[in-house]
Image 1 (cartoon, rainbow, N blue to C red):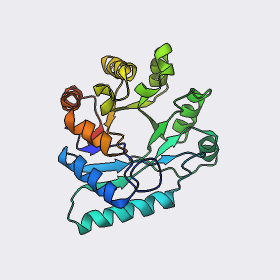
Image 2 (cartoon, rainbow, N blue to C red):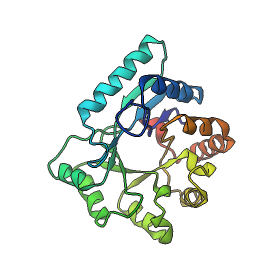
Image 3 (cartoon, rainbow, N blue to C red):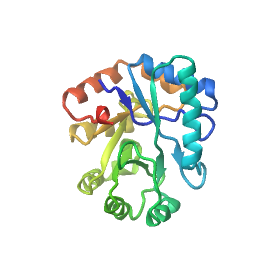
Image 4 (cartoon, one colour):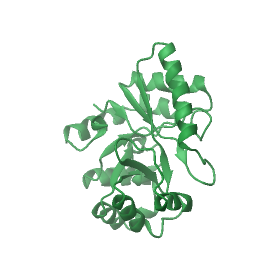
Length: 230
């Protein structure tokens, strides 16, 4: 139904995802068992904890892809990034940095889980001014939006697409996150579904939940999901 996963952390040793190559291969096999044929893995890029670069990410992706080929695993692996909208990102944007994207100019962005970006709509505007299409990772997980759900309307009006996590619908991240995910579906504010796969606990949760398959089918049949366009 989805075919392509747009959010994961499968490059070993560069963020809080897979720690080594063997783990990366196990995770990829597990995603293939779920029916994914293409994976766009998205390592974190942020100044404080994971200051990854295009070179680091490309090298890591190539290493994993070569091992997939050697072992006869046919899953296609591409790499983009999950960019935190921090001060470094804003400076890079002003300097016309060459960002890693999901496809064309679709860029996956994330926010702090603690506090919203004060000038968020301005950053979104600046991204679009430079030709990018912002895709907000897991908007249902920013619980400060629960206080004023009108933020979601403002972000949509600002031209932001939403990528929801499949595990949010299972209650994996808590009841409030699940409720926000359901709210966004009712509003038809969902464009991509992602696994946000970091480790084997995520994989086990995906495999063991029938809700994941029901949600994927429901949203695919409703024509909301763009995963297959990437």
